[in-house]
Image 1 (cartoon, rainbow, N blue to C red):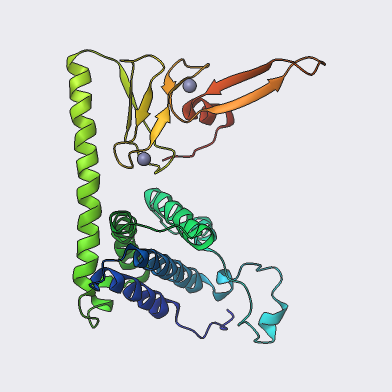
Image 2: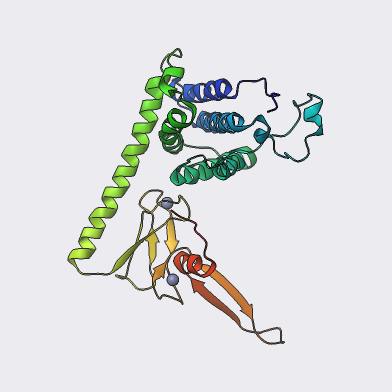
Length: 280
Ligand SMILES: [Zn+2]
Ligand SMILES: [Zn+2]
């Protein structure tokens, strides 16, 4: 096995998380700072995932593992390493147990990270705490099971960090429970009125917290977690109401004003047709 990685991924990852959590502790009320909390925590998670890859083989942290001439010359500083999501893919291929729900959380975190970096969007404290809290909820058991490390212990020398971590986790869990309870209450109401409904995934936050009822035909549905409003479609295949359809457009005939036929299929039918397993 090559032993070219001299830097400590785990230590740097935990440092990055501590730096990020510090933004939740400082007194300043400006919301601009919370984006840095998310960027730093995301970076920390990425490094910790790479630590797991490096424990299989150091080479796995590099992006182009087939073009590593410089590795032989010990010139690794400028070599690009894998991204957060690629690290997860590699871990999955290496049969490292990684909770599919955490993969969703990481995707969402990466999306936010890109938005912050490229679109200069801001992030309010509520959203920052929810995303960070949820990812740390998964990071703690991952570090324990896969790296034999206790995050709480690793941050124990940094004042206030343990409490800040507990706070963001609590914040997320509270928000999730509230959304879940609201959806359950609505379900109860629909059951009592004997109105058909189904629960679907929110394409925005990837949570199964959208309730689509047949109460109002061609209605819209709102996600109880992220408040996003979605258009409801009727699936051509199974005739169920869905919010995240696959739409295929066909142009029929030679003339310019040819008809465009849209085939609306729900995610379930789409999965059936292509045998894809997008969810677990
Ligand atoms: Zn949502
Ligand atoms: Zn369908």
